[in-house]
Image: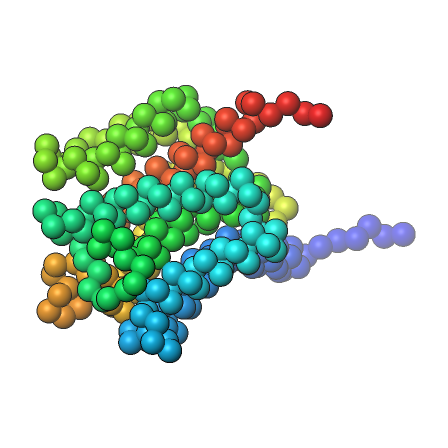
Amino acid sequence: MPEASFSPATDARARIVGVGVEFLQFTWKEAQACLFAGLFFVAVFCVPRTGVLGLPRYDMLLLIALVIQGWMLWSGRETLDELKAICLFHLLGFALEVFKTSSGIRSWSYPDFAYTKLLGVPLFSGFMYAAVGSYIIQAWRLLQLRVEHHPPYWMAGLVATALYLNFFTHHFIGDYRWYLAAAALGLYARAQVVFRPHRIDRRMPLSLALVLIGFFIWLAENIGTFFGLWAYPHQLGAWAAVHVTKWSAWSLLVLMSFTIVTNLKHIKATVHVPA
């Protein structure tokens, strides 16, 4: 029998189809990883500023966030351990919100009334930070993510803690964000994120992944402020775009969230004893 032969055109078409399938798989898995954030933003679009049936908007968004979170746990999309980690993101984010909106700081504000405001911050706000943690946890599983050349966990934890504290202390002792960012960049210089969209492992520098995620969160923040969920001082008269420097802040917060996930996974793997 004659040997099968493939023309260059056939080979090129096969490659294009393969790339297309891989891209679609990656897009689908990313969409699943963003499920909590996506559903929450649908609620932001749909819930009017005047509220629903006498329930203020912020309270309605809190109720919707709780329903989404409960459904994800009930459906098995998140485990109880993952929910515990997400609650940690919620608490850290809410603490930052309380500080940033306090009378002496006023980095931003929540202008609308709500029954579920605590210390001037609506309780739904913590879910916006939890959504970042949920995305990382979901993407880790769906894309079979792993990190090569991860720095020592204690050093990563130290840098992440310093980054988080700087969001508080820079109001009093100066902003050391860029020094800490440079330290983080050096610490993770060799770190590579390995992920599998379909059948082939792909690699990306961890720093690039953090910057890209931070960019999309910055876009989401522009949407949130456009719909009046919260407002920065320069947006009180009329809406204006969130300053691009917030992109760097979100990228650093994503690094902090990523560090929490990796450290929790490391601890769990260390203490777990197979049956």
